[in-house]
Length: 106
Image (tube, rainbow, N blue to C red; front, top):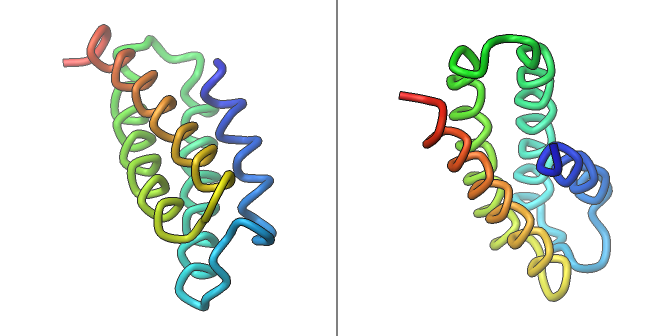
């Protein structure tokens, strides 16, 4: 799934804030929390990948919530190209998962 790859690649960039990121204690905390939340939700998605898709709906919904929070963190804690790319990737991934939820979840 493209979305999982995108999120995994994104995690690599937020684990070591650098140029393009706001270097404040709050943003460092928010980025670390975001990374931990992504890791947890990705493990959940991976653990449930062989389940019937309808049974994976709670995992999909949790993942969307994590991505929405992450998008807010990226809006606040990144700048320039990093901000544009990260927010764009989150918004695209959110749209992908919302489509899956709309098609398969009640």
